[in-house]
Length: 114
Length: 351
Image (cartoon, rainbow over the protein chains, first blue to last red):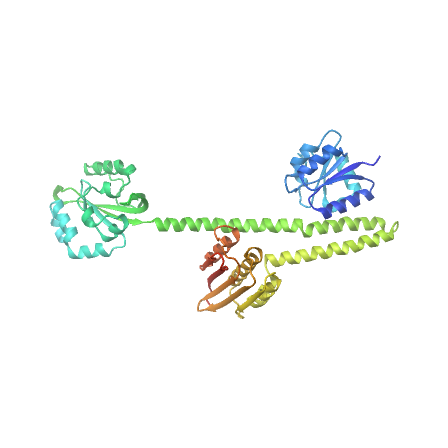
């Protein structure tokens, strides 16, 4: 069964391109959210196996949102164009993927790190 | 001065201070308050500057206790104790050095002053006389405080501007470039298996790239317009006025080049003003007038909109005022309700 993904990012153009890239690589994108509150709600509703979570959300830090979402069958992978990978280590996230390098394989690799 | 050396009593001293014509002239013309008291704390001299600063005339002050006139209630006991200690032979605490202290005006308000006190010892064991030189430093302290505050605002504004640029880059061009990277990655995987999709993706990539380039160009111009650096105010303001949504008449603009800081400040005043006109003024037209007169560049932007702009609110106008002040210029905003808004700046520009 394809792994299910929820994409949480405030940039619609990025969500569209990330969805296409991940779907072409065999993931099933089950939902999108544009902010932290929406991400938390959608994660609770959809129970995705992976949440791709932007660090710089308009209403919250991705690190805080990750702490609320991660666990119970859901892994969080953080993403950003900013260099937040150094901060990912102490967070609830399983890994970090720079936005420009996002692909199904990169997501797999980030999840395998855990 | 020979008379002073032969004086024997406080009354003689009083006579000297109050009646010696030359000395009275000196006291009258002094910008600082010059006040004198005897060893019991009673006022014996009070010059016109002291009248202006403390609100008591010389006639009212003379013969009264100095502490009651200009020492705030909270400091009076210390004043009296210090005086008594010194007169009875104790070491001087405040004499002959500059101190900053709070004084009281007749109407009760307190004012910061700087003060030196010197003791004129009487001959043959006479009790000393104390001369105080007092200067109201409210204006200086207020100016220092405003300078400190404006420096903080300028640094804060610079930090804010950097943060804004970072965010604009992040939300704009960078997102499109990220999208481009994702798309190109897909193209590579689909070149042979799905050339039709690959071609579509390439079209999209070209579009993303064009959008990113346009956003970078716009951002770069907002940071500092290259046309201003290359061509000066005339082409820069002409270009700027063509990009705003409200019709703009440029009445005058100097063709010659000016100091870079003056050109940049004039440009950003006009840019901020036209942004405000577009956003808030409901104006039919804006007028820009920039001209050099003597050693000053005069910058004026006015509109026929609804007025009512308040320079105290909004960081934009505040930032312009700080910027103009940093160049030693003057900045005013006139905006009566219903009568449009006029921004004026005078920027010193030595040729």
